[in-house]
Image (cartoon, rainbow, N blue to C red; front, side, top):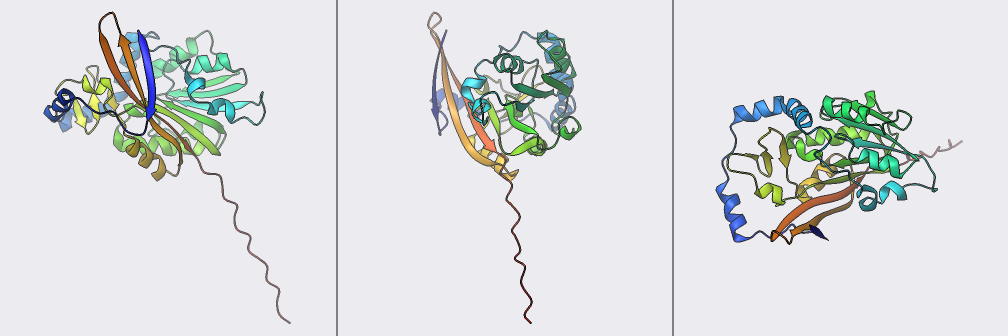
Length: 284
């Protein structure tokens, strides 16, 4: 199995068969079922982790390679770095980072109480280097666990796609409060026309680019324009926002699977100093 990767500012071009499939699959899940899915979102992710334990996702050792920000934001080599992993799952990104960089302290949270427990049970979990907690980023205040403007970098990796599009801005507002001015959110998630989007069967569509899996978990597929607007409207500045295209090739089976991700970096603006009001002398 080999993977070929390239980057670009335009999403991939669909084949005529793929275009036809998306045109056919226009029927939306009923409002009643959509409301039920929203109410049961946490339960469905908890059941996902119950079924899969810690075995579903591979450890993400690519994170520091892809997001050099985790190294470059230091002023000197062994400077302590405080980060937040928003949506940590069972620690597939968190623990490789902590192993690779002894000067990181990480806050980490997840929607699923079961996922948080798996993180705490991991032999690499060390309360001196990491604080993990359960949090619904759309409504639970991060300031209850993380001091204001104390975080050097936030990772938001394959997390926002699981949130209803109407609530995504709430996640970004929540993160904004704990991020230091001048520091960035490092984002990676599913892009428009990713292979996973085209595999959904009829009856899975919730809204434009938003689908439900058979287990009740949901996934949104981002365009760069949608993501940029989401961040900019919340007060961030755009640094990088581009598609990553991967072709996973299985020569033995003659398969080529097109993957599309969106990899981005958005910065919280530096604070502008308050203007100095000149003191005018009185005329005699």
